Length: 358
Ligand code: FES
Ligand SMILES: [Fe+2]
Image (tube, rainbow, N blue to C red; front, side, top):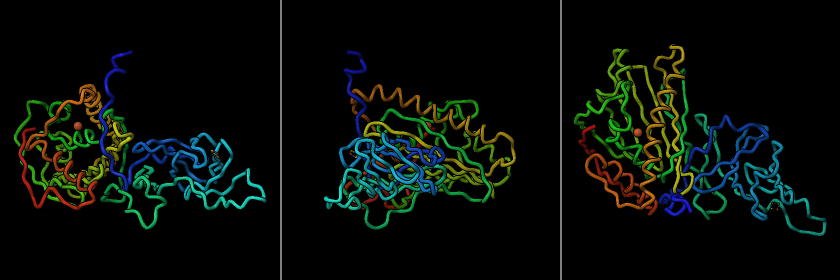
């Protein structure tokens, strides 16, 4: 038995159902093809119908449980490989059971495979995962999350990386201000020697909190780049349940906007997706490639650190959250617990100022 096998797997986290999660890049969905994805431990099969609509079904046939992705999709119906039942994939409704004869009264139209609301937004196929056991979705679901944009013309980029830890560690790593000078040291970003005391103001927002609009920290080189426009720079960072971090940087009419999500793949693993758009340096050649290069490096630094952290977490150590640097993490846990309990308690009753060195 290997060392790997005798140590417990990464600890699981409780998951928030009843919300939208980015499934996969919607450009990867081609008409007539099926693609598998795993979200919150739910096996999914996604695809695009001939009319362009995308769908997300539970990747299990309601007859005897074989993955529907093992079967066929003609751009109109998904057909199970085992007994050939056909399903309309947007509604999940069964359209044909080949074994039925005229002597049987079973109405295939009363049978449904699991089908989830699925929408294309900002280059992603977003999937709404209802509470388990909530049956077919009645009523409306909330709107799909969207990256804020502030002009018609902009460039955009996407990044994705798998993280071997549960969604809670992914999220508190995302909002953790104190790791920057250690994990993200680089000449173009910031150095450990540049650590200084910071004061940031936060305010409650529905299902989350906002780091109020402020002039960005002087030791962050990318922010300084925006200074070339000679306009005052402001940045706002929002965290919103279940897993979204919105960052907006504006300098006059120039802007940079990102939406970073940490999505549970299983209860003990997750994935980080970054969607970014900007109109700064719009006409500079290669700007998208350059942004992607630096963005990928930044995400890789977090990913490598979390891979190492996962080694330690398998031993289930007791952990600490300290004031003030880990205060946003405490708010996240309180918000999440309130959501899971079905209450609307908010850990922030008004504006709060935090201090830390980073
Ligand atoms: S298992 Fe799918 S049709 Fe029988
Ligand atoms: Fe980071």
